[in-house]
Image (cartoon, one colour):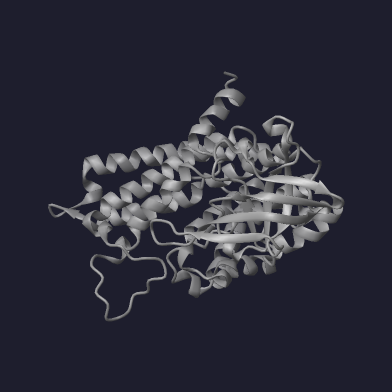
Length: 397
């Protein structure tokens, strides 16, 4: 979507574009996916932006935000997508950080927010459990108060990058007699605490992105409880609203469509570019139309946030359509590269000058990307659950 920018906004865009061009590390440009990165490489761009003061554009200024307007934040996201920078980890910046500065006490803000901004503290999300994913309120992890501590027992699953984490924000039941939503509390847990075990889950593309986390008699100081006991469901929903808005990924989907078009120009069918085939070009156009509509919806949501309104149930719309579009783009990309998509290269696999790799460079990793993106309709609350939220909270059904 084309937008008309003021001279000041154009100057800001040029400043952002120049900063990224001058400061985004070449080391990261050479890496295809986050699955190929070390912990330090994942944090490299984060630390550069922190030093610049641009690490948390959506945070209030008093807690380290940039004070940018909605349009400036839009430009920032567009330019990062355009340059294909490594996405920043959302667990601290977009999830637990806003929970802490919104619902935490002053001591918690002083203790935790600086480490989130600097990247010194790596966070993971302790929400889903083996029997409680989309039905999160049925979680079974329990926290029992003993003096000035809670003793937590249970397990979490699909815990992204927990193998690197310093801290976990975790939901646990604190009232066995209350109904599901009224029994949950929100805790901040040091991952070095005795009783925590992290076990890898290797995904079908060979990557170690997610984990199981087991908590056995884990002793958590009472001061690490966010807000009030048994009010954790309120904070959890607030966090999920922020997560679902971010999952939409409009700017990066626009870049992915651009990449898809370039592939379709290069791939030939009977001597003609695939992009010139009516059936395939129609599929791309349909995705572009849906993405434009989603972008307008995202901008309306951002405008509401600028007036002090947090993400509401309408964030479910962003999550559903955003992930559906992402999946359709990867499907079309895999279709475009054809039989080259069958080539498999596991995470951590590096090409050498003497190694034979069939097919063009742009086909590399497309099958892995396709399979990896199947998860988007599940995490952050499955799309089926999002339909229920919209029916109940938006449509009043």
